Amino acid sequence: QVQLVESGGGLVQAGGSLRLSCAASGSRFSINAMGWYRQAPGKQRELVARISSGGSTNYVDSVKGRFTISRDNAKNTVYLQMNSLKPEDTAVYYCTEYSSSWYGAPRYWGQGTQVTVSS
Image: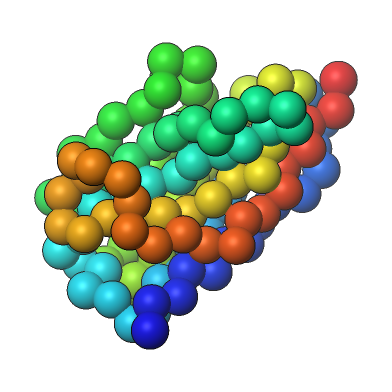
C-alpha cells in the first residue's frame, strides 16, 4: 500500500520561504517520477513541479526561479523549497507519485498540506 505523507505547510508572510517534504512508503520510489500539485480555493488543481527518477525537473512558469523540487532516494522523500512566496501561492499542496515516468497522470496522491501566504 503506497502512502505519501506531506509536511511543512503553514502560514508565512509574502517574501518568505517554506520547505515542503513528502515521505513515500510502499512504492518503488527511486524509479518513479514525483510531483507537487496545488489547488487554490475556487481554482483547478495545477501541476507545480515534477522530478524524474534521474533528477530532471519541470516547473510551471509562475514558480520558475522561486521554487525548487528535489528528491532523496535514500530517504524516499521529495521536497519542494519555496522562496519569495506570494499571496497567489496560497493553496493546498499535494505530493504525487507517478508510475515510472511523469507522462500521464500521477498514480498516487498525498492528503495535502495547506500553504497560506499573507500579504
